[in-house]
Image 1 (cartoon, rainbow, N blue to C red):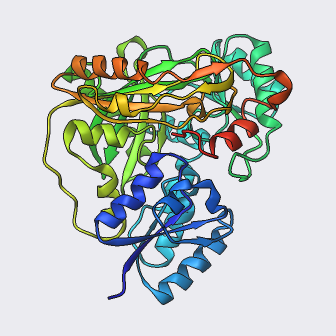
Image 2: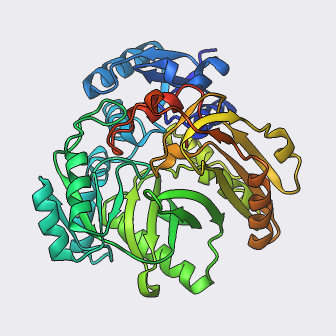
Length: 434
């Protein structure tokens, strides 16, 4: 019997990409990955996932290959686990008459400056902002908004290139670095502008939305020493029900303002002065293993639900739970070369640990940048209360300490923090990515 296919346009370079294809198989679907470089994704070989060479930076090439495969097989869906390719995948799905989100809404949502404009038009609380095409314009924008500000690219992901700037000199320097970077880590062209925003002080959260419903409110742990590195997540967020409801309401308003009425959205918010304000909306499932923590805490398998939705299948329902879950990431305290790598098996045997992994390898060069690419591993724990889950995660992650020795400076190629060429190539060859 011929298989029902679901096509993935590229993948993220984390455990989530692997989970997407595993969930597809669990639903009786055959995953196929369209990609420019299959060596980027170790799980393709490990799981024997069929893949097709494709110039995925060209939407027409993607559509042409999807049409070819649809002529040879029963293609039930087209999607992507990478934010960089969700618009291309949605356009291909729509052209083939398959389920999927509105490609134009996705394209607009991927531009943070468009998000800000739409939030302002719809009364969704979010930072004041300006766009700038030069470092001089960025400095002027920061003066108008008032320091400190956040300077970031309009269309990247994972906090890459996002910096808090406390002085005009820092604004000028970081804006110049961003504007000098013309392509992202996927080789896709970048906007010739930067976004300058008022800095929101306060705790950070995310709201996971699926088909217009709040599924989880997540508390975040941040390290802002270099950028905005998320070092952990708590499910549910450690706030009272009234605050959780308010965060959810603002998140739904943000999603509605962007016209994202299909599938998943990951909404990031802060609570300056105790009132929610939207940092940004990612029109996709959360990264950082958040879907796995939501599954562990609530029984909701958002990845399986998304694959079922993409393929036009009935909604996947798991047994409901009311536990708590916590994620903690292994992050380096210094730059250098990896000297020792812990065995995660010991962490997996600890009470409440449902997952533990380390992707660092001996000799790997570490250049911290304050983004998700700094992460070297993770643990996920559950508990009957958030305190129990968090304590278990804090204990377990301490058992996964990665040893780092000083590296000879000439051995490390450095570049602007927004481009991260060495870190990208290093991490993609066996390193841990989320």
